[in-house]
Length: 150
Ligand code: HEC
Image (tube, rainbow, N blue to C red; front, side, top):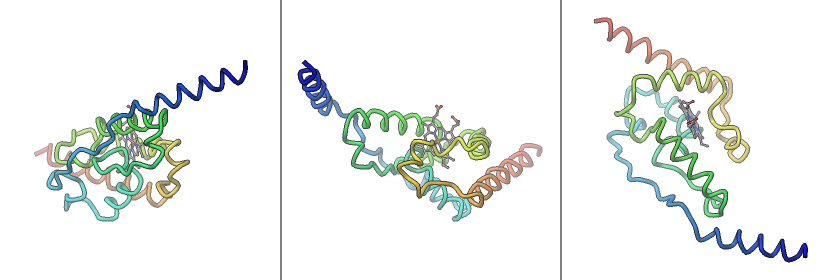
């Protein structure tokens, strides 16, 4: 009886392997990407690439387990939702609030996502990394508001 259950669970899990989300990365237009924006300090760009780019750009490095359901569905969702909110591959189209949101998400320790950090310890932000990102996001805000005042 128990064995029958296990077997059917395995069959279902096996069958779901054929339902794979499309994890091909969209093309990158380098002219629009943050990595090409000279106004962004290379140190900042480096941190964003290391800690955020998998979910917030078109340059996602999909790990081997992204091919296995149900992990594949979860990762696909995170990347789609992440790109929809903030996309460094479409930086020239950023919304005015995005730097503020970056500041908040880093200050509150919301990003990078906890589950991601468990599997990607290299993406962890040190205190110095956090300070660098916040100073950058903040500085940009100050610059923009001084422009707005004109
Ligand atoms: C594992 C994937 C992943 C990584 C890595 C990641 N994010 Fe996110 N991020 C998301 C998802 C998913 C959302 C959308 C969350 C939602 O809709 O609630 C999001 C949303 C955001 C938002 C929008 C504001 C918000 O709270 O919804 C900002 C800003 C953000 N992330 C910044 C960052 C920064 C900065 C990093 C790197 C330090 C980073 N993220 C790393 C997945 C990720």
